[in-house]
Length: 481
Figure 1 (cartoon, rainbow, N blue to C red):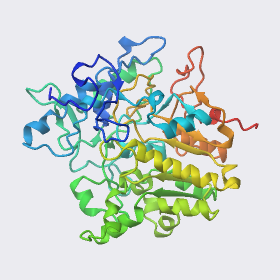
Figure 2: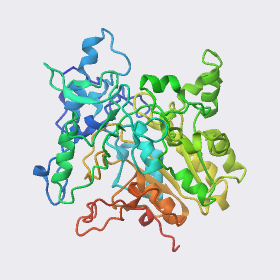
Figure 3: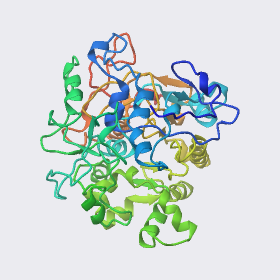
Figure 4: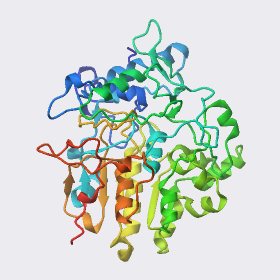
């Protein structure tokens, strides 16, 4: 293993086995921390799931005990290949078991909101992977695949994952160097890394459908969307395999359009990203900030219907500053998705959690300044994924792609006051189910996860007895008041 200590952590040389506080005299809450792995095969591996380990409290048998091993072994080759490893070498292995302690003053804004409103302690990232795949699941309830642009599945020119270890290594993936393994043909058990996951799913009592169609190479990690910020197709990126051709998978935006329900996706630094696309050598900081726009977070950027249509793109894809302007002008759409730019989104290493808290507090302040708007608003606060950090919560396998570990979810609304904690199993698709139930909409497609029923429990409130099942978040509200 590569040595990777975070020397700022108190007693870093003598930590006990298991989780520990992300604290130290030189590590205040307002600190950048190490990133760790949030990629599909790595996350399945670190979750260490086997039916042989199943118990009534943990029927999926995921032990969640290989987090430090995975992060300190699969990236070893970066230290071997490069004399000075680049920033993409996570160097976060020693942080993978760390946690913020809200009882000691960490995360004060989110704790205050959780104490006053409603939160879930059983909400999960939808994909055993990172930002791109989880945002796609948020917008579609499904995974997307490499195609010819007309919806016909084809083979990517590169970036096909191979998690088999290289000879002479413990766990260095054959194809994942420089984060290259972004696609997998998960319908074919002979493909590297596929059979163990499929066999595990088959061993579960409810044998979840892997949801992998033959000859489809699904995006399992962060490949860029086929559309650039201004709506042009990223032909160069597609040719290299670093951007996926635009897909025709149905999104929540299309469903809302069909029912004449107003909506918008607000991405931080989106306007600047368009300017940077056209003026890449500009020294203007108001243009350079466009590099912080999260293109892989905008689920509509992967699909033709909205991003490929100039009128739809103008109407629905906007900058985060437009979100605040819409609140202030009483013109906020019925449904809004808001993604902070990469400098303030709280992502480990590239941002800090208190910066994300500042964004959240700004949103709450703007809403509360408009009492009539706040009176019928639900602000759903969550993360795209857990950053690859350890969590002990029950994981309900739903298909080949996930579910993944627990992540925070808080809902701020007049209908969620009281400090209620929901134990109902939920994930990103629960947000889709909430939208659909609230506006009486149907599931997006015949295979999207919003078709799953709400959980039924018996005894243990965290574990559905009708798996696969995900909640619609309505139990976090008290609409009778």
